[in-house]
Amino acid sequence: MASITIRNLDEDVKEALRRQAAANGRSMEEEVRVLLSGETQAPVPLPPASVPVAQSLKGKRILLIIGGGIAAYKVLDLIRRLKERGAQVRPVMTEAAQAFITPLSVGALAADHVYTDLFSREDEQDVGHIRLARDVDLIVVAPATADRMAQMVAGLGGDLAAAILLARKIPVLIAPAMNPAMWNNPATQRNVKLLHQDGVHFIGPERGEMAEKGEAGTGRMSEPLQIVAKIEQLLLPLQYLPLAGKKIIITSGPTHEPIDPVRYIANRSSGKQGHAIAAALARLGADVRLVAGPVTIPDPQGVTTIHVETARQMRDAVEAQLPADAAVMVAAVADWRTANAADQKIKKQAGEAAPSLQMVENPDILATIGHHAQRPHFVVGFAAETQNVVDNARKKLDKKAADWIVANNVSFAEDGSSVMGGDHNQVLVVSRDGVDEWPLLNKDEVAQRLAEKIADALS
Image 1: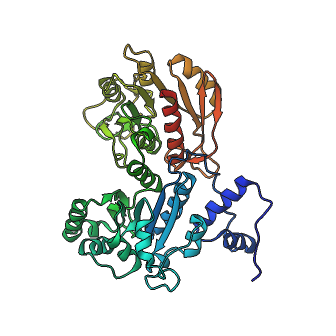
Image 2: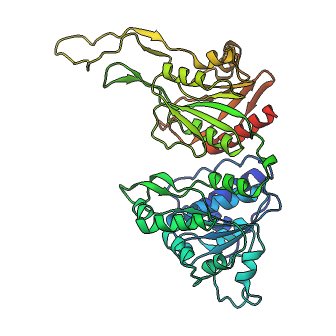
């Protein structure tokens, strides 16, 4: 087949195409061929262009050992995250990893040679596995399987990855990924303990749904941004943690206002955005106190989490954390509650009208903090709107004495989807200096960008 040369494209389009190709495990040229051939069932929307980030890892050399496992697909995004922060990524792929993603895709993203074979005639002319173990600042193993960890404990060196790890004299970070039963197996837990004793650094695993149908628990590989944050923590001096010593309060999720022991009033919030912001601020060194309503997602790492249910409980928990340097009020708090929640389930009676509910207003937590005698130095509120987004955000900015309002449109899309509960968000940051409109981003990207903006404001 004739080769394809990609040129004369806007940089944003080219970046979006590269991201889509990486997500599908293909080179850019392969992705273009698929799009041109019409093999996809429907047009695939290009991902949004990435947001410029600080070159926090500029000049840092990272050896990335990619293990076998379905989580290997996340490594493509991890490489991109590291490269956009200025890191040099040198990839090593095990034989099993190549069953999930291709060396072509990895090499294209890393812009470097992909090492795969301990007995490569070219790579081993100068005892390459020793050189690879020396010429970098950090070794990252992602995903790290139970087998790989067992080999590290036993000191085996049967393949290129094992030989590098055995010959290393530099720090190593591993991101485990496996079925929960494998992670919880006593043998695996013994190996984890021994690796900790040997000075190996860990990130994850996380709790959640597995690739296997009906399987859930602890075993998911940490997300790329979490791994990047851990790498930054290991490689960067303290001055790269701009929020070190700052205490920040965050609210996240919905509140549940009981009608009776069975029913309640709530908003549709999943807590994904608030939890992501809490994690991003913690990665920048902040002492984060997260007051979370009822959510089904895990607590962020490195964050002190206080769980509440109602708006009044959330207000009390927030006030108990004062004083603080900043407050970020992300939670979708129910505006009203019933005046008298029933002690017993309200039963439906045949022939009787539906019961009426007397509603009373809940406390406005953002306004409470904005006007508080111990008001934090910087207060950020969120506004979920369905119309007149900017106007409503500006009114809230003044009425609630906030420094910024992060506003978004939560109207339902034509397909019935909503920002609430989804993985992407498009926000406007409204301040007294104007309106900063951001593109559609993954909620982790929104969180990282907002955390860096808050760090600048507090500096």
